[in-house]
Length: 238
Image (cartoon, rainbow, N blue to C red; front, side):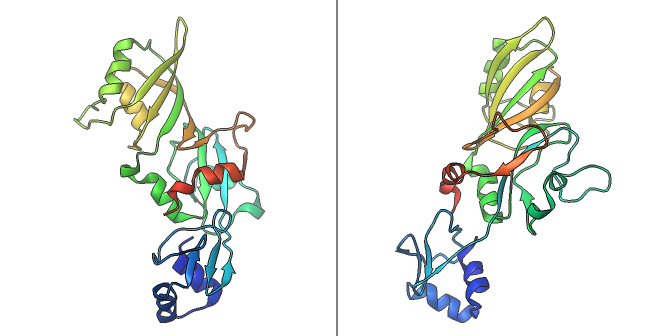
């Protein structure tokens, strides 16, 4: 949560008094004076004090296993949304999905009320990795692996950042792969394979940054982030 917003909500300060608190070093995070008013902090990770008074945040963080058929929108007139997967008591105001997954793609979603954290995770300059596993229709070759590592160019001329492609399993028919990318272009994974003449049959996101999809979580299930998972995101609290 932004420190200026936290102070405004908890202490009911005027804007002028709030600025004075920062300028006079009375706002501290983990014992250090903080003058950046829009600094993102969470009392689950940081000790936040203002004029000697400790403040507490109330942000929510959920790890959701989005199933196929569900859309990553807060509202949809036709399809079930990721919010519909949450119990009523957990549908806190301000929840949103950090990034999107296509309706026919399943896998890991980080759902939170912490908008600034989501912003940092999605910044292109941050190159936060996303890992996908997929079954594709055609055989995948070493030439495909090299092409992905060099940067796939879509039909139309857009070139992607280099990506890591691994062949996990081959059959007489489809091939199972794992792909690690650091971008989030629209339909990116499917378009990358299409550029190589390969059709994606099923697609699942299994990791985003330091977060991984738990093996014991089923499609449609979710849980609160563990403290260890939240700590792993600490570097994105800026």
